[in-house]
Length: 157
Image (cartoon, rainbow, N blue to C red; front, side, top):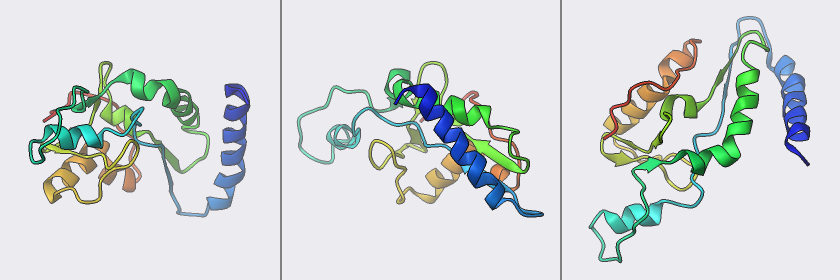
């Protein structure tokens, strides 16, 4: 199946789903995936943190490079962007818009690597890191019905 067929199926699925979710006073938040790594970065994070005696890893894991996530997420995120404004009280949020700039995507907040594996956020972040990530993603605004954030200056740590 090519991209156009996949795009059509994704849009048809949302065209079917969104009216079913609609109700007076109800807002719907659709959140796309966080940027994905091409392979699991955690072994390198562990190897490089110094707490275990392991061979060093030469892979960069403090930032996710665009080729890692763009190659398979860019098209899907573009479909989600095209859905903005299409479903009334629905907000479409794309974490890459808040986490990524032209050169890289953020993978560390408050000094903590926030990925659990190649495509999931850790559940055991410190409260400070959890707040920082939620703020970066604009979750409070999104849950109040605000607009999604776009990439801007980041305080990568």
